[in-house]
Amino acid sequence: MPLVPMRQILLEAAKGGYGVGAFNVNNMEQIQAIMKACSETQSPVIIQASRGALKYANMIYLKKLMEAAVIENPDVPVAVHLDHGNSLDTCKAAIELGFTSVMIDASLEADGKAIASYEYNVKTTKSVVDYAHPRGVTVEAELGALGGIEDGHGAGLAADDTSHLTNPDQVVDFVKKTGCDCLAVAIGTSHGAYKTMRYDKDGNPRPPALALELIERIEQKLAEAGYPNYPLVMHGSSSVPPELVEIVNKYGGAMKKTMGIPMQDIQFGIKRGVRKINVDTDGRIAITGAIRKVFAQKPEEFDPRSYLAPAREALYDLIKGKVRDFGQTGHAKDYKPATLEDMKAYYASRK
Ligand code: G3H
Ligand code: 13P
Ligand code: ZN
Image (cartoon, rainbow, N blue to C red; front, side, top):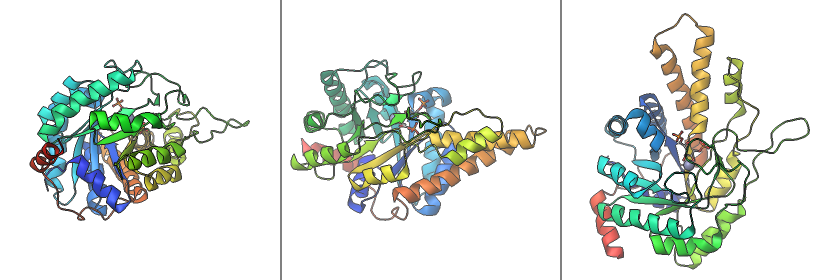
């Protein structure tokens, strides 16, 4: 099976009423773990690389690893996606390298920090759509801004800052003006492990407050405007499982008490139009816990395979659970994959 256009993966998910995990990758072990879980469970999947990942691994290494994943798993529909592209140039570079899908996150300016104006977002997103669609490539955009992580891509908003949630009254205009294929919405999730600022009097974390009702309102407005089943994207969707944090801390880590996005909130979103669910942090915690365990229990080990193999296994276990909970398992063979040529013809016919 070739790389599958992300647009098709998301529209098929809308038909089937399920969500598709978009998992961040930086290296071979992460890619192998995700693909093993998705092949075994027959789950369509999105593997995505951030700008940081492309810099870390060097674009070409990561792209070739992703290609290997496709060759090794001919029975799994896979979209290879650029996460949080910051400019037209970054998106062009990813498309030239062979990504079937790009995100242009122009909710922030090209520095990845300053909150951008609505006009800037529309103009920049449209420039990416105009470049990507004639090449058959799917475009994800973002409206509203997420809190969390200050040194990576993000405005440095506190995790619970709700001042930049998606404005449902802008969504139809945005989708119409830009022609983007799917839209990341800000509903109170944030990137990273520390998504909540809410603690009870004993210092125990409470789940982040999400504006889940926004998803419903956005879907409704899109449907009324002639965009039924429009795919929405939920970033910052790690659940930060306490049992994984506990492993990290048991073996010498020092993660603070925290809570991520409860799975039932993600499932609520899926029932109302969320099709792409971005997860990075949970994988990082699973990997770190497994490596710390080997270091603590077998300090004499120095072969990287002795800790990278358990790390890969821990990520595989995590992803197997996620794809089951998102409902994507068993859907790999539901449809005949479209090609980029099919998508070029489709986008040309829409003009
Ligand atoms: O959106 C954030 C993702 O978790 C990627 O993080 O920029 O550290 O690779 P990163
Ligand atoms: P998490 O930090 O919650 O895993 O979110 C990842 C993400 O949104 C990548 O774009
Ligand atoms: Zn994100």
